[in-house]
Image (cartoon, rainbow, N blue to C red; front, side):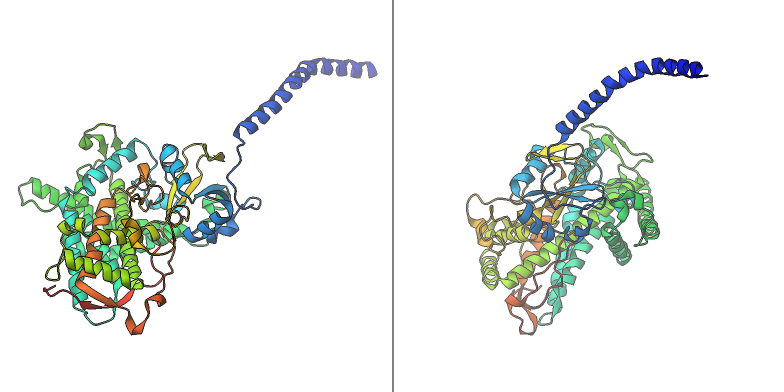
Length: 522
């Protein structure tokens, strides 16, 4: 029996000898390869607060605002790292780091992050704002720049002028009374974008559409644990599994009806009925197809085809991008002027000299209104329309000697960069005259000290139309009217706090009393 066991053991040892020799060589080799891989990858992450196992820095979620991140930047520097669950986040808070991300390595940082809610509500990134960088996004941007926001598209610019006229008449009707200026301005910008998107004949559905937008805005910002720890997707404290489908169904019902009406009008026009003014839906339907297609042709008409989902998602981009952002900038400009009576007096004096008190401002006057331009630039420096510009890495990257992994969320703090003490003297003070000096940074995207509209491939495609609305509205409101704060309030008592979201509007609406300033009818 013992002989049999001995022979069996000898056979087993002989059989295992090749395996043991193999393991003798492979295990050290794998160990060395692991060390090499770790060494090659292991540039350090950017500095940042130490996190806990699994959840990382999720206990600091309330600090992921423009102000909270600016405070953290004072401690950790212009490039710092946070880990929220399994998601890496990197905050960029100074001009040089912004240049690295938006210009030097723009090709790596040109994607947009999207939460589960955003992906669902944009029909799986069927829009332009959240689509990943690539051929389809490039052609969609070209379509938006050349068609939707082009100066040649007279209807959009006309809607701005008409709605500003309506605003002026509304303020004049309440002369000497306390006016909720913030509400009037929000109505102005929502009217402009709604009319540009759907046409002037569609105003009867505007209140319903604003309600849909408001629900979308809440869902975009809602906390979802699954965005950070996917294994916990079954936890749904906000009821998103019910709210998301309900919100998208409401949008589908609303915009599908409008698209069907536009398609029928197009057929009627083709059958010889009178040509009507076109809106953005008409422009997008010119590229309609049942299946999305793209090629890199220079001929835009043949380079891209859009589905219904693309059209609906792009319309949502226009409404979000053109309503609250512009309204916030207009309201902040007026607030800063009322808090700085000397600057208000100076710009109104400039308007009186250039335009006169016997007529309203015209577009041809803008080039001569130097101090007005300074006021608008200073407003955009202190209150950028979108305070945090969100990007995502397409692959692993190195910035400033630090490792940034693929799919990391990059938060470019335009608010903090505009107040960077290394770039601006007395950065937290409203001082429009700083822009009268030579060599002061401009906001067109090439000076990374001042990026209210972003820079590079993902810069705002609707910037020119937004600036036109900002220029026209502010110029008319301060030229046509004198403004006083209600109930004897002093300028220093104005509430200058903001609320963080897609934009950073005033925490409370601006309230003021207008008095007619011009001698001509309004």
